[in-house]
Image (cartoon, rainbow, N blue to C red):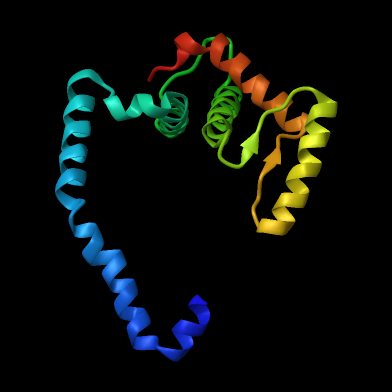
Length: 162
């Protein structure tokens, strides 16, 4: 129906799109600005905002991944028993783990039991084809890398400084 209307009434379609994308959202601007300011102040005073706790695992995964990447790019030291190359590899693995952790639940799923993972992946394959989505389970190799990153994070937690 929408495509037919768009072809028959292109000007009305553009006006309707403008109305819903711009005019209807104007009422949200004060509230959105208030929330952004409140979030900014909360993060500045205590390091996190109330909204961060709505999806704390994703928020922390993003912050950790980005800050570890920054640490890698601005690195001035490393654990005494490692070379610079080894330390960079470890930071990459940790950061990759948290990038994966941030995506878990959106279109990526961590299922450790092989039979359950296979069944779920078959279901995803059908749904992805039907609805043109990209949901999938982590492969055993990806799970191993994910777990290795968490192990390294735990092992080198107190070395994450510059």
